[in-house]
Length: 198
Image (cartoon, rainbow, N blue to C red; front, side):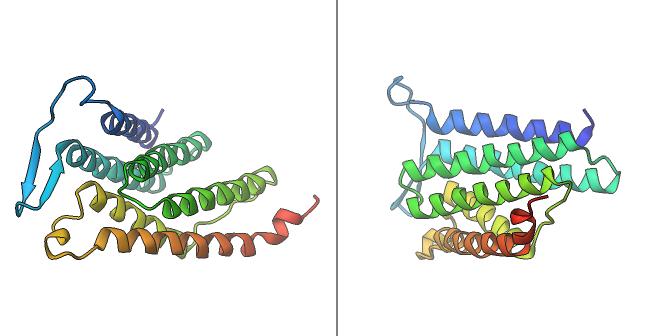
């Protein structure tokens, strides 16, 4: 359990705390969380702000564990596996919860999760044949737009919401479009590998 893997485990811990915070039935338990008011028109539930801060911290561990693993040659098969699992637990769970809460349109959530499932299947096939599927630029841009879009959504799109600029929605739509583009690119680049009978 080297340092990058420990950071990945911390990210999983953050993910479960965020999930619990967003899903816990505070109202049903008689617990009233404080509300924040912006411009007397935007009412903010504090649990989303706390979740947003935790999501940012979790995202930083995602950057750090990969950077440290590459720089100090600490890349392991376990690290690759647990890093992918941590990413899906964090991002997909928050996407689903935000969708169910009405913050994100279902199409965006479905497109991103379906694309990830397809790409993971391609990587699994490649791994079984001793090959590695390298990350592509469109996939990296998709991830960047998605992470920032989710963060802004958790923060109620502030400060842009004050001027009625739907930056969070725009970034999530871009992430969904890039999901489709990168998914097609992954398929095209690995088509021969997928249908190779060896």
